[in-house]
Image (cartoon, rainbow, N blue to C red; front, top):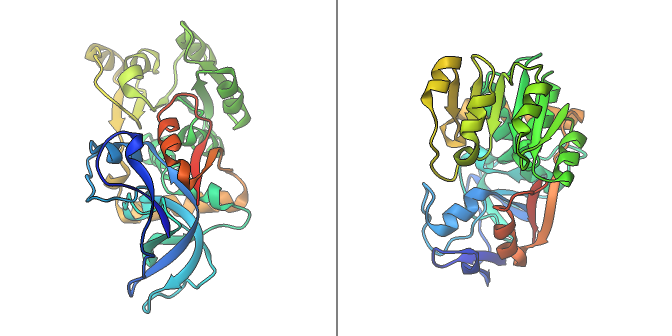
Length: 324
């Protein structure tokens, strides 16, 4: 089969399209013919060798995939050849193997794709929607009637968070850095959109939240925005850090004055039972049509270098997907 691999750590240029052996299922595993593979920022950090998990080389990156079951292990029940399924990082914390024509996964880490959901849309269930759900509810404590500000709402996690927050009855303010991004934020259901590339945008958030500030803020780039989040948050507000790429100086007195909670998240810290509940709720919402995954660029598998460049650029609209 064809697969993207890196044989050394480095920039996007170390990714190459190789011919490798097809995976063979173990007794408790299945092999999936990959129809779509999700691209996440964490994939780029692993490629650089700077991620918490440093893989053995050569490595096939990618933890999210959707496709058809083509082989099953002898102990597997409940899955059969031909089933439309997806597997993702949230289900087994396996960050590799999906940038390929086939991938093997434990059967317990594979779920059926709901009717009406495409392969490409299903890869958002591996990281984007579980991250947004966990940030909003388990860590953020979001409640009906509250106001949430999603700081960087046009990407895959951001659009997922908009949809899940509206489903739960929250008022949603989302930010983006372009006219296209602002239009997308509103299209996905946000009540208000602000341009975070313009000076004075914090005033727009205050106005949209009735002058009180958001009860909850989801932050995608804390090394740039955390100080601003603390300034704009409501009294007793909660700030959930989803993404960060460096250090930032903040004035802790602001946290004292407003009695703010600043919380971080990582999917690998979530107990398996809780993750199963999160995924079950996401699949109910997808089946009911309450959420609709937003797709961005869909690129051929051979264009993985470009995908790794794009996923770290601002202005991404939805999930970047590789198609074998």
